[in-house]
Length: 414
Image (cartoon, rainbow, N blue to C red; front, side, top):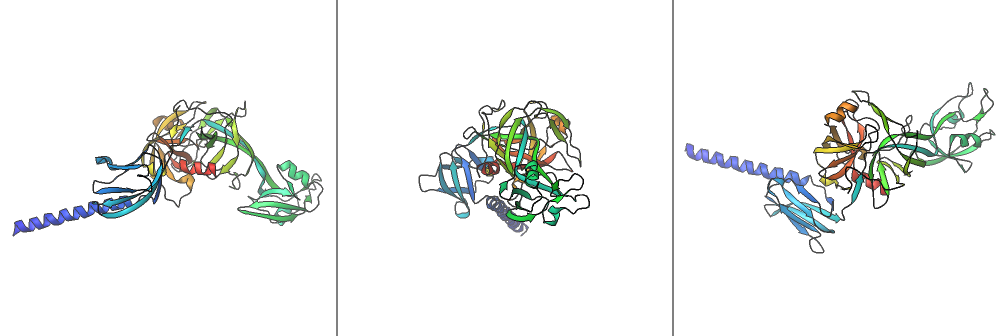
């Protein structure tokens, strides 16, 4: 009787283990996206056991896909040729668990950056950063309802390109009609400048900004289009946080002359001298939440990756070791070790779609982790460019955020 009980218990344990194993396989498949875009010639591995099979259906042939179980590496989906297909994953060859639409596209290759760059940009319009009374006279801007972050585009139909031009348009003190942008809205308001008793000039009683400049890092150069991407996040006004609207801008070669290391609670920064002897690398035509973009004045080369690197699809990015390219001394681009800690969900902003940790002892010694000016440093994993560094975690500067390369390319083309 005892022997029979032992056999029953062993059978129950085996059944429980089998159910657990199958549950883990179902969980791994359920986490796959509904749609995937793969580059021709790439391999995507799904961490499942031999109990999972993949059936490929396509209008023409096999849609450029092949599937093969590779032991401990799981199920390998090989993107052989350009095409589209549906892949249905089944347990034990019978139970369908997940169907994924896969598009195989020509492999895109980018030249990774890492070069420190200077950015100088004039705004399209002028940004209101605050209101100020004119002595004892209340601010006309405040009385008219202007707020910090508003962008003044025109005065009585005349396009405004600088703070000086704004002053000239209002110099006669007459009531004027302003066109301004607030968030996603374009609106108009009337305003009557007041005379400043201190010098007799007519003014709005508003502080405005019409340009900005700073240091960042080049992420990629696209040899097919001649375009580039940098920073991985928007250039925003330091006082209002508004994304600076591009009027005209220039990207410059920069030499890092000093590093202020980051420490807990106090992000560091790179100091450059790109204005000392300016060398233009190209134009700045787009300033977006996912980076700045424009046309390079000449092809950009990489000494570390002269043949460029393929672009990683989001499905190919995973937690684990990676590297980043950046410049923290002079003009030399170096490669440093880091780690992708986790990938964020779809609800997170694109510029914070992955969490990274700096693990390279040399970089930690020089910078304390991530510093201002490293934004845009390209991230590389498994021989692919996967994204860029965007932000530092203030309370732990060895940690930070990154953006996926696909998100930057979408913004560059949008």
